[in-house]
Length: 338
Image (cartoon, rainbow, N blue to C red; front, side, top):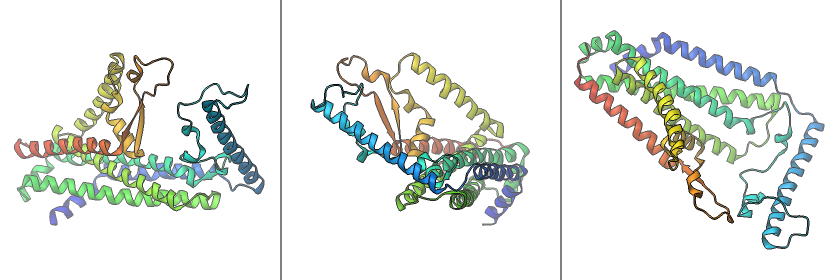
């Protein structure tokens, strides 16, 4: 317990951590101020017009679905055929859509918390992921480079216990900070929606889906923090983690993706960590495989899309994180730290 307390004091006393917290507050403040300045309470006339537009949009969706069904069944009136329709008209069925047009979709200059909460949450998660990776890398990297770990081992000569305390303290601190930042961030925008925007659509389903997205985001933040910590431990320097992340993005996410597309490799997106991150955050992600329709008949419709779900996505992310962490602990236990 004394070791954890000492590590917590060391973490909070680091100037880089304090600077990142200040930048976090500034980023949130600028976003909230910009949103507040660009929003207003809608008037009755605006609400009526937006409601009428939403009604017309839903009617057009229903009309397109009925036209598709009629054309498939051969009952369409002459001259009423549409140029294109999916192989399965159920894709146009309004009853099967994730959401139907509502009045808030047609209001300009009005902040609607129900519509904007998820994009705002993704922005928060992206910032916290970057925050966690940088703090995790600098926290252990600076100690290894300056000899602070060696001094700590003189007091507690158990390498794995010391490194485990550092990682546990880091992850616990990041979780607490992320939860507090999320509550303040989303709470601020909820207040903006209540006072200077539109506060409709806050159903139990909305809160349940937002909570699920937030939970997945917190898991991603912890994984990114552990990755930064592990990479810096393996490289014995903060720059090792930053260099590895940059090299992966340039060499694999950009370079390898281009090569895989040139050689026409099947489903290259599923080999990228970014695809798994997107699938985990959203619950699933759809991609296009151009090879799926090679050799198919030109008379029929070929759907070359495929879906990556959250289960395999989180399994890949956890496996990569665990492998890096185990490698970091193994290297820390065996090598010379001086």
